[in-house]
Image (tube, rainbow, N blue to C red; front, top):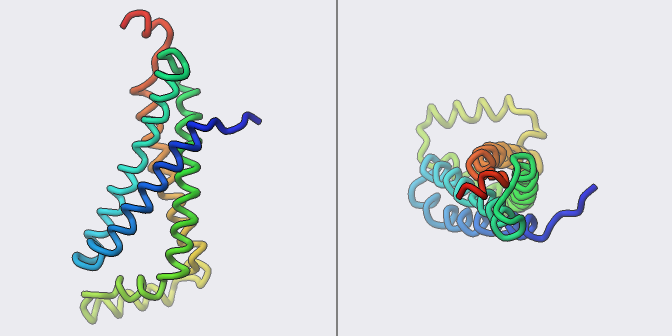
Length: 171
């Protein structure tokens, strides 16, 4: 198995760091002021913004390390590596967040709900298996969500950044 290049690790760590920083800003400012819906939207935008490290990493390899060319498959492997590192960081951060702030988060999700909505939420929680409410399972769900978003960004990036030797000569 091929070892992980430094640039894949670097771009994955940068994306993960950006995501954690923006996630904490979201939690301590936007989430507290505007509630779950705005915070959730901000969270998805944070993930997408942070995953811009995928095309940057692919472009770095293409332009700086590979003479201006990259195949779709090589770009996809690079992007998948960056996405995997980013997703693992998200998993660890989310698990720690739910371990340390889970009760606060649970109370926060109920803030501003009507009595009917609270009863409905409680009913759904009672039907949810216990394992699904653990920090590790919640973190795994976030890992999968972020990973799938990353795969989509990776596919688009590879299609846009793919350049063969013939393409490079023409430019």
